Length: 110
Length: 114
Image (cartoon, rainbow over all chains, first blue to last red; front, side, top):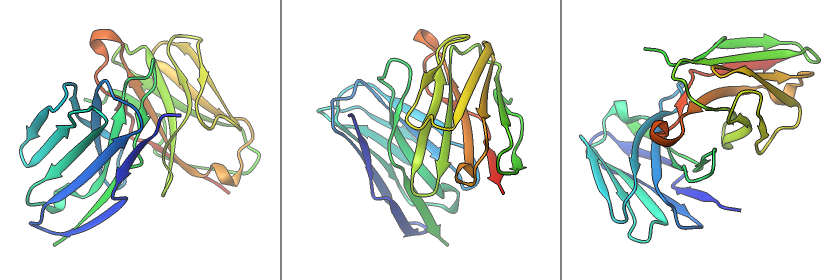
């Protein structure tokens, strides 16, 4: 069946360093979503990408959808302690349910 | 501004008890979901519902059942709780068509079965 893999599984960075997580699908995606889950919290929707090669920015976060629509990335510039959490990508193209990626847990060291 | 509400944040139950986890959403969403989240295993779908009285099994339905008698409410039932059901349970909802724009998750219920 369809799988959505994320790498890395864990990442520790010094505050101020950049961070990138990658999401790869075994099939072509119609669109892709990203979520953030703070420690002890619940996943919160961040953004949806639809077009091939699309790039969207939210302050220090840059989201990119691959040209072939089989991968996506989330890049955080100059990480802050508030960026700590787990970042999930999700394929929402199922009839009702989404396929969530395995998640990347980010730890930011002050 | 709470849109998906789970009835309990923390719950402790005994092995063999019947456990009800309640979830209510106020966004008029058609789709509702129950996930469990365990360290290293990500989000695993237990059951979902795309309409009142409709339900579909997810990836790990064994030991669980659900009920959706009203559009806004989706209940997860552990028929006979076991220690391996100790987990964080997350309810989510999503719309269809123009309303379909991401899942909205509840705050979660951390269930401990002793």
